[in-house]
Every structure is written in structure tokens, then in C-alpha cells.
Image (cartoon, rainbow, N blue to C red; front, side, top):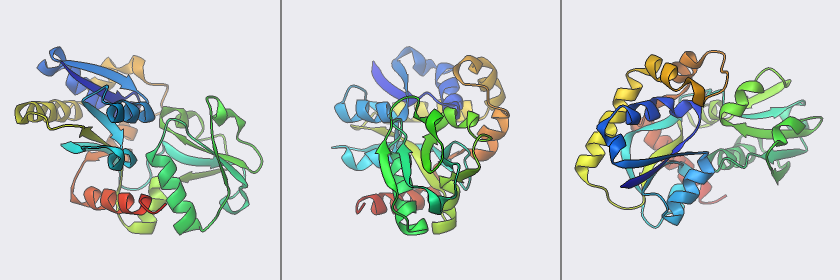
Amino acid sequence: MLKISAVSYLNTVPFIHGLKQSELIQSIDLQLDYPSICADKLINGTVDLALVPVAVIPKLKEAHIISDYCIGANGAVDTVCLYSDVSITEIESIALDYQSRTSVALLKILLKEYWKLNPELRNASPGYEKKIKGKDAALVIGDRAFALNDKHAYIYDLSAFWKEMTGLPFVFAAWVANAKLHQEFIRNFNKALEKGLSDIDTALVLESANYPNCTNPKDYLNNKISYNLDDEKKKGMELFLKKISVL
């Protein structure tokens, strides 16, 4: 039985729905985790395939991107943001989301190359997003961001600034295997993902217990998340991986 780790955020609901509705669900062990756990499991070999933050790809002995679908954005995404009560130039410290690797690396790139700032960066622990105040800011990713988008004076959407800086979309996570998989499985896997993406409304109904109260989940999934791993996203991913190699 193939072991698969997928991100447990709202943006993955179409993928989860597609897999659950496919015959593949009988032959896979589907586990839902937050991104850094997906990464650890793939690195450690406790799963065979995972939807992983792309920053992890260079750390794998073998990395096979097996799908034409990803978690990406072509501009603002709403759920990978730096939150602050003061402007970016006044921030003294930033708490880094423990659930993220790619987003932390993206923030470091933007601080260095776009804003040209050097605030203190601190590893955070659960509950840190409730301690944003004064000149202490925080990077928050995923579904927890929905509750913060009207609470702080300054919100810096990282993929929007990446787009402004590079002209390219951003890929947060890709489906990566740590060994070669059978072509038949890959075809069936991609068909399942495609089916889920073609029926987002049903996916939201059936998986409603698995995500928090997002004001407009249909808009988020249809207009904020960009799922096709096309040539422009591949260019963006290659550029990002090149940049993190010298961080």
C-alpha cells in the first residue's frame, strides 16, 4: 500500500476529494498533515509520496515531481502573509511559522532582495500568531491566516510581492515521490486530482468539516489558489530553488 501525505489545509480539499472518490483510495494510505510534517515524512521515507513544500526538494536523495498539479498562486494568495501592527520598515522581529519551510524561505528572499531589511527572525511555537503586537510581526500560513486578515494594520502577501519582484507565479507545494512510481499509478493519480479540481463545489460540501470558517471558500479555491503546474510556474519554482541555494 502506497503511503501518501497531503497538506491538511483548505487549499488541498479538491485533491483530497478527488482521491477519496477514486478507486485509488482502496490502495493508498492517505495521511493529512501540515506542510513541514509532510516534508519530514518524505525525507525520512515514512511515506512514498507527499504534497511537500518545494523548498524541501533539494534535501531529498531522489525527487520525482509526479503531477501536473500543485499548490500555487499567480499573485496574492491570502494565506501566506506577514502580519504586523507597524509598517515593514519598522518591524524589529518576525516570528516564523513552524508549519512552513517554503514560506519561511520566501520571506527571507523578499527581506533580502525586495525590502532590503534585516529584522530578527525567530522560530515560533503554537499560539504565536496571537502575540503579534507593536514591532513584533509574524509570518502565518494556511487556514489560520483567515482569522488574521482583518486584525492587523499591515498585511504583506508574500506571493504577491514575489510576483511583483520576479514577474512569475509562485509554487508553494508540489506532489513529489522519493522513488520512481509506476506510470499507471501516476496516470490514475493525476486523473483523481483532475476530477477533484473539476468539482470544487461538491468537494467543499463533502469536506466541510475539514476546514475552518473561511468567508468565501469558493473564491479562495477558484481565484486565489492556482493548481496547474504550467511552464510559468516551473520557471518560478526553478528561480526560487536557485535563490534558496544561496540563502
